[in-house]
Each structure stands twice: as structure tokens, then as C-alpha cells.
Amino acid sequence: MYLVFDIGGTNMRVAVSTDGKTINNSKIVPTPPDFDLGIQTLKKVAEELSLGEKIQGAAGGVAGPMDKDLTMMIQSPQIAGWINKPLKAQMERAFECKVLVYNDTVVGGLGEATKGAGARGKVVAYLALGSGVGGKRIVDQKIDESSLNFEPGHQIIVPDGDPCNCGGKGHLESYVGGANIEKIYGQRAENIQDPKIWDEIARYLGIGLNNTIVHWSPDIVVLGGSVMKSLPLDRVKAHLEQELKIFPKVPEIVLGVLGHDAGFYGALSLLK
Image (cartoon, rainbow, N blue to C red; front, side):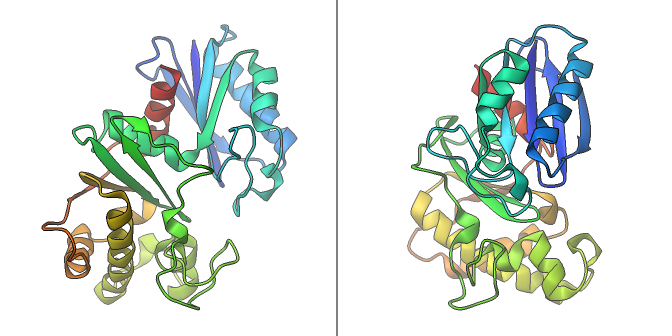
């Protein structure tokens, strides 16, 4: 029995797999802001889903960048109570097995690159637009190494621009992340109907994608996250084509297809 998880700022998603390839059962519960309570909750849900069967290995993602040794989360605007806590050690104690923990966007990107929309690409750039913006580069269906983590959502696209939750200004996340979209336009992304607003958001994302593409040089770009359910992909592509001039053509830009299950399949890939 294998355990996979996706700990977000609002909810944690937990699932089990008997064969390491497919998901057998899953559950969604609110993410406790308190770290110790969060570990207790995760353990309780795992026991419920596994029916008490021994867990051989566990893997998943959390809503924030990890330290270099992948033992703890070093930053997270969404679940500050989990920062600098012994995440890996406590999970291994709770489940009595080896646990792999990465940033949630990393794991989701790996899922889309191995089982989803990016499976046919050698070099995949994955960006997730949810409350914030995260991203990862996947090469040959493996996580591209970095010192801490790739953070394309915190590239500066407007000097001295709007504040970001991390404390910076003018970041991509400041303009296309769901939490900041609500601050700017006074309504949640899924409720926005004005095409002019979406075109403005698409323009900012086009700028950010240009920067990400010239740094990462991907075969394919996969866009996931809740904001992309409302943001017109054709307008994103149109603005990107206006920005990207150094390469002969724009790489393929597609939407993720796995939804919330991307993190589950990415975690199963890690367990291989």
C-alpha cells in the first residue's frame, strides 16, 4: 500500500494506491493551520483510506518551497504554521516508512509531465495558477534539479509594481495569482465575466511565459491551476506571440488535464 498526498493552503488531498500506478481511494479535508494537528489529521485520514494496512512508502507535495535537503518547508504564505517544522521526520514517524516531500507544484508538474498533457514532451515547463503561482521544469520525465526551487511566479514583470504575498513587488503572482486577482478586481477569478479584465490578466501571463520560456527553453508549456479554468488560453497565446521574438516559434501551450489528481500521479512517479 502506498500513500500520496497534496497539502494545500486550504485543503489537503490524500489517496492510496495498491499497485503504485493507480489511485484506489482518496479524500479531501481542510488543512489545519497548526502543524502538529496537521500531521495528526494526515495520519488519521491515511489509516482510514488504507484500512489499517501497512504503508510501504509515501510521497507528495506541500504549498511552499522546501529546504535543500527536502526535510522542511521554508516559506508558505498560505500555511505559515508549517514553516520550518520537521515535516519529513514527523511524517516518517507517523507512517513508519520512507517519505518523499516536495513543493506541491513540483509534484503536480511531474504528474502532468508523466501521465498528463506534457507526457509527449522531453522538456516540459509547468506553471500552476491557483491562489499563487508556482512552476517547475521537468526533463525526460524527471524533476530538473535546483538549489531550492524554481519560482517563476516571483519573477518581476512590473518594476515597483503591486505587492506580492511574499513581500516583493511587481511579481507575476501579483497579477495572475487568484488571491491577487481578487484584490485587484474585487471578485474571485471564477466570477469575473468581463473579457477586458481577462485580456489584461492574459497579457501579464504572456509576459511571464516569455521570460520563463527564454530561461527554460521547453518543448511544451503546461498550464494548470484554478485560474486557468477561467483565463482564455487563446488570449494568453496571442500575447505570448507578441512578446516572444528570440525563438523561431512559440512552443506548444496546453492546459493540464489531470486536475487535482496531477499531484497524486506525480507522487506515484516519485515513489518509483
